[in-house]
Length: 380
Ligand code: HCA
Ligand code: CU
Image 1 (cartoon, rainbow, N blue to C red):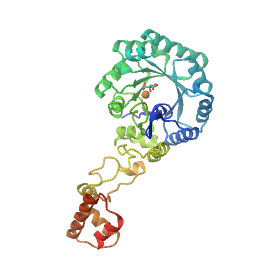
Image 2: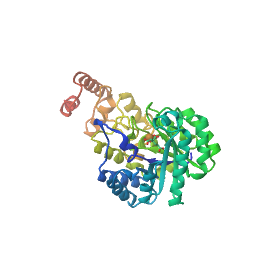
Image 3: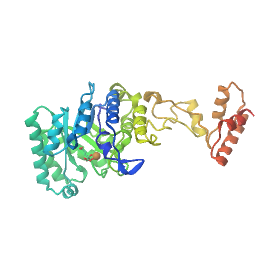
Image 4: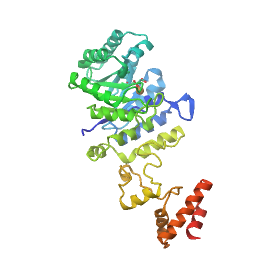
């Protein structure tokens, strides 16, 4: 399939997340941490980094200017802006590569923001014109916030009225309400009326569908997918960077390895995890501690015979190693035989089976087997 571009919004959406260690506070990265994250993403080869508008403070303005001035070739830096004059003026003053405008179009969002649909369209148009009056060539993306709860009539009206003024439309599933089939249908319809305008998808995880929906958007022809590192963002967050790579990965997508430094994913995820004082979550595609570990005896056995038997992705592609020597309550003789071989001891199959059974029993009774006990079981 066609190469996708990735917009990482860890520095914007990610700082709208609740802190995993302190749910009464939001995540906030220090200036150095933001620069560190941006550098990692640039080295990874990310296509776009989204930052928030520097309107809030001089401090942010200074931080974002530094990020914009980081050495980079491929990566473009885009500023997320409300359709507000002050946001836009401040954003343009730091010379980004583009402006990511957003405005709510669903009835819920309009009510929440106390404006009519007509006003939302007018504000979007005024904002685009303001940007163009200052920098006529700058890249502009416009998102219809909460697009999947926007009536089809209003959605099409919003797009038709603005499509000739922007370079890209953002389709954010702001509340995580969308399902893959619906995304396919809407994207197909929008593509029909916006020939030549790029589309971007941003999938929230309220129902755990951020990644599935991103994949559906990709298959329907969206050219940019949004991510954050570890999937952090408002409420349950959005599609994670490692997750996006995993879902679009297939043997026909050689461009992924060409376009991105995939071996950096473990470092990217563990850096943000360390900053947040958490571990990389156990279910994170590619970078979870156990993503390439095999525990049950049946699995370990089969992996010996064929390394693809229980593993879809190749660990080495992502700078990781396949592991099959995990002490567990479901391990089998292969573990014991391999360990013995390493120590240059010879065991019969029968002996290995008996030892494995003793280790399993100890695991079940004590919940663990320490190194000394393991040696004792194995070699007496
Ligand atoms: C937000 C909303 C947003 C915007 C996405 C976009 C969303 O928190 O500001 O600009 O495309 O999910 O709708 O993140
Ligand atoms: Cu969002």
